[in-house]
Length: 460
Image 1 (cartoon, rainbow, N blue to C red):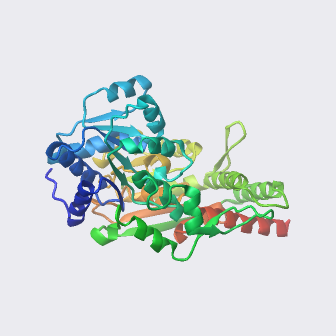
Image 2 (image 1 turned 135 degrees about the vertical axis):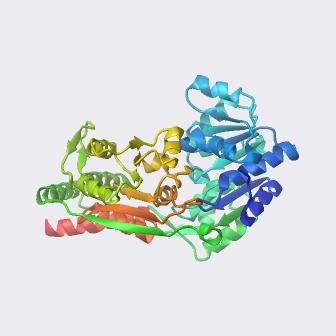
Image 3 (image 1 turned 45 degrees about the horizontal axis):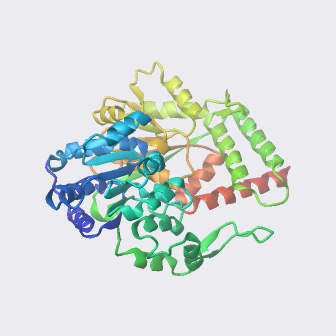
């Protein structure tokens, strides 16, 4: 296929060629991969400015997206891609295979840096979904930072550079400029741009908030090495419609939910702050039960109800054979969905390999099951259907939006409908409210939990 770049893509290609280390913060569907591949081809074969390129990507993307994308276009088909995946032996063999681009999953970055030690061979690095390097405490960030001086060119790609707040930008920008624009240390950056927000009784600071004018100041500081574009400014995509399906728990299940919630709340200490760990544990249990089953301490599954399963089957039936991409949160959800679909005459598949992606896009799959954490990034699923079902909801707004964009992206020709199965009177409602607000989700987790705790204790 002939590549005819949009004006914004020409601009991004030029910026990659002109700026040795750059962040392309482009919205989902704007063609980050082909834009980068075009620049790589130019740098390697026309300008002779790079020798070996490393692409760091989420696992699913590393497995097939870059290879499939370069094969799609006439001008990039010549590029040789070597996926550095699998066992230790396979990874080493892939690294020793002559290629232009080596693609590795982000979990193996630390291994790769240790493997080469002082003999780092990649003069250009592309970090696909750089927001996964947002934590300055993560090993993958520290490892890549250790070899940053040996990297002549770097391109960071993401549609959500700061999913949880502006402080997510520091680590990503540090990899580009070594701290020149946003301070050399994270603590200095935080002190300059943020101020204490929530404190404990002993004065411990639990969270920080941006000082007035922080967003404008930060964006001005990084504007010369970062390009930011929103899809709605450059693409005419079909409408995105959100559909909330209320699920009523039967009397027995509703009673079981209220009892579990009450018992877990009453086990929390009366005094002191609710910890993130206790909040997560309580939320997870309640979300599991809303979905219909629970893990016990030994990871055994206890099925409680089929209310959400029944609502899901009714939805699938109402779609009259239209393909559906289904996101689940827990493994017992996946198992119960698969069991419920047996005998329905539907072609059901789990999204595991690049072949599953291809079969979905060629309309050979009716129901495609996926976990948002493993399929939210980079996958192009827009040709396979236009219906998304969230069987189990996620607090993670970044994963939520990225997962939805697997269908709502360039090339989609139909209105995309996002269906949410929401159990009324449960934690599902709190998650849905947080996602609709598009705000600090972690803060919403705690605040909504505290509201439920107060209500339960007042009625205890």
